[in-house]
Length: 186
Image (cartoon, rainbow, N blue to C red):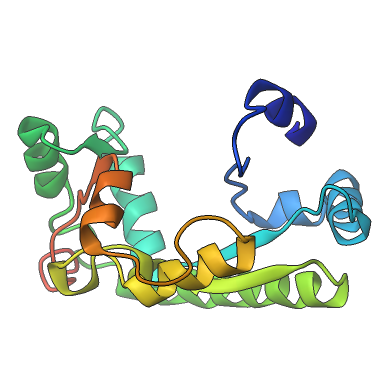
């Protein structure tokens, strides 16, 4: 898969993809073989940016998309109708179901920890970053230091002196969630 992407984007300094670490996938023999290859491959070296997201946000997002299947998962910047609709569907998602939510969060935490342990055990080169620091820090956009950490690890892009303007130009999606959990978990 990565070889095909490298051929398609020959002039790119970086080729990547998103691989969500769902439990069944990461325990599959093919996934383990892929991680082993990543750990052993030196030319070209494959590096993993391990993005961990607040698990409450993950569960809220999953719940929102399972209840509102016609709502777009992502909205382009400037698409006010899509953004407004997405914000509205994120209200009052867990009325009366907090016990189930807590159990799900415990399960997700254990799984995420297993993924980290697996990457370390297999000597996969990775950097750990937090979703909340990359995106929408206090409504101001991403944390520049967190992005510089990623760029430095990958050896591409501005590893220092990154500006919010540069960061904003690179973003194509808008935030589609209410600013706080108080309206989501009512």
